Length: 121
Image 1 (cartoon, rainbow, N blue to C red):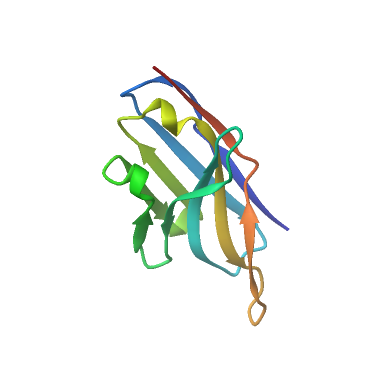
Image 2: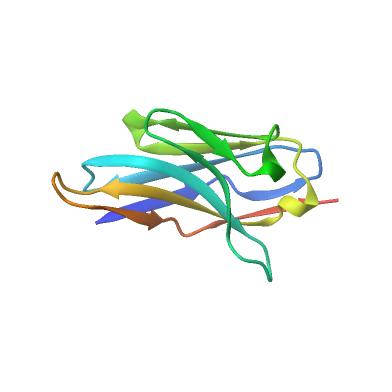
């Protein structure tokens, strides 16, 4: 079994910073892409940032220049550093990872439970 456990959400004023963490645990052979998604009330879940196993990153236009995704492969952990936060960043943030649990088996997407980020104006 694989678990993704997120931490680091909370309440912050506009212009502030937060750092999210997501650690994968369980039976893991390899982890490919890791990423962060978010879902605001009444809106669809959207991709925020993704990082490949080689460290190549991509971001949603709305967070470019403010958010930084990184990962520690030794710890099976992905991070999201969020700076200059805006009220529009308020959402539940979900961690996602593409994980191969056994050699010669297919990879699958796994999700964390979500962590609330609230930015006050």
